[in-house]
Image (cartoon, rainbow over all chains, first blue to last red; front, side, top):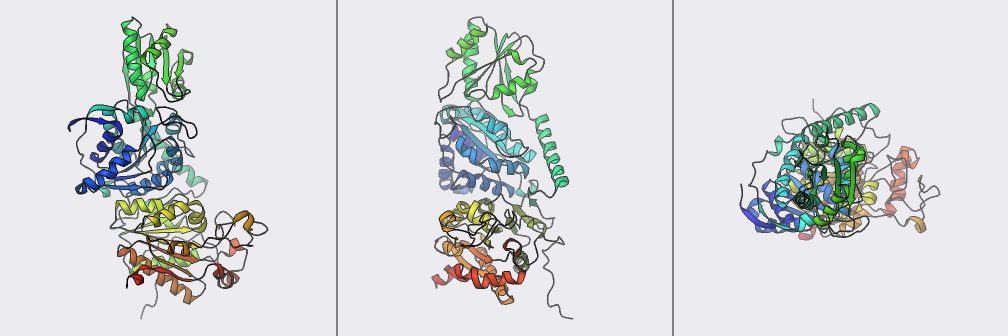
Length: 351
Length: 249
C-alpha cells in the first residue's frame, strides 16, 4: 500500500485517480467538486514525468464529451462535477453507456433543485442511479462513505468501467468531498495498453476498423443493439452488488443509509445499542446495481431509511424488502446533516 | 495500360445514403483520396457528426467516432489530447456545428486544438427534413421558416469561415465549394492544406464547403449548383480567410 496521509476527500480521490493511471482530466469547475480539477491542473505542471493532461472545458457538456473521446482511445480519463453539471452531462452519459465507453464520472452531490446550495445533499440519487439521460441504460454507481473508501472505489471505478465497457459514477457528497481524514493512498497501478482495451480507437493498423457509433438503422437492428446493451447491464447486476451489513442478527430496527449519512447512522446505531435498542444497519455501496439481496428474507423487522433528500433511495428499499409497510423514511433537505442524536430520536419513534 | 483513376483504397463497398445532387458525397470522396495520398488510414481517427453524414462510419475502413449532435469538436479534443500522434478529422454540418455545437467549435478554436475541421454548409437541415439552419439565407424558405427567414425573428446567417479567421488559435480558414470540376479541385487543395497543417502540429485548420442540397432546397440538382454560385456566394464569399503560415513569412 501507499503512504498514510491526512488529506481532503476531493484531493485524496484525485491523487488516487492519478495513481490508477488516469492521466487525462476534463472538467468544468463547480462547487463542491472544484478541488479535483485544481489538483489535476497543478499535477500537470508539477509532475511533468507523469504526462498528466488537464483541460478546463467550456461547459460540462463539452467536458463529458471530451471524456468520451479520450476513453475511446483506450486511455483512462475522467471528469468531476456536481448536480447542475451532472445534469448537463446526461446526454453524454446515455451516449457513453450505449457506445460502450469506459468513462469515470465523479458526482459530488449538493442540494437542489435549481441553482440550489453548495452544502451536502443526496438529492441526485435518481439522476445517477435511474439514468438521468434518454433511453434504456444504466450507470454503474458506487457510493463511498469515507475518504479511504473514496480512494479505493476511485481505483476500482476504472477497472469496472473497462471490464464492462460502461460509465461508472462515483457518487459522493459535499461532506465527503470537503472533509479531511487520515487515509492510505493506494499505490500506482499497472495499466492495460490502449490496444488491449475493447474496441479502442488506436488506428486501424493490421486489424479491422473500430467504430464508436450509436446510430440506429431500423427497428430490427435497433432492438438487437438494445438487447446487447441489456445483456451488459444484466451481467453487471449479477456480479457487482456491494453493500455492508452490521449488527443484523438480533436487530429489531435496521437503518438503511449510504454516503456521509451512513457515517452519522453508524453513530446513531451505537448510541441506540448503548440504550438497549437493538439496531442494525445496511449500507448500500453499489447504488446500481442496488443490493436487493441484502434485504431478502428479512421479515418482522422495521427499516428506517435516512437520506439527505425528500426520499429517493427509499423507493429502491421498498422494492427490495419483503413487506414495504415495514419501511419508514426520515429525510433532511436544505444542506444540513442531522446529528446522530436526531437519528436516534427517529429510531425511538419506531420502538 | 495506364491507370488514370481508381477508387480510393480506404473506401469500403458501402453505398452512401445521400440524395442525388448532394455535395456530401463529393467531399467524402476527396477525404478518401487524401487519406490514401497522405497515408492517414492506419493512423487516423475520423469524428463524424449527427446529420446526413451520420452513417459515414460505414464508408471508410478507418477507426471512427460518431459523436453526439454538435459535440464532435469536444470529442475530437478528447481523442487528440489523449493521443496527439493521431490524425484527427472532425466533420460537421451547419445544424450540428453552428446551432447545436457553436460553443464546442468556438472553444476548440479558442484552445487552438490541433485537429482539422470540415464544415459542410448547405444552409438547411437536410436529414431532419429541410428546417431552417443558422446559415439559412434571409428570405430562404425552410419548413420552420415557411414564408422565408426573417431578421426580426431569426437574425442573420452566420459566416463561419470569417468568424474562425478572427480566432488566434485557428491556423487556416478557407471557404470553398463543389459546384464545378475546378471548384472541386480547389476544395481538395484546401482540404490537403488543412490536413498537412495538422500533421505539422499547427493549430485548428478549418475548411467550409458550400454544398448543394437539392432535396432540402426543393430544387433541381443543376439549379442547386447555380444557386450556390449566384446566391449563396454573395453572403458566403469563397476564398482563403486566414493562412497563418503565410503571415509568418
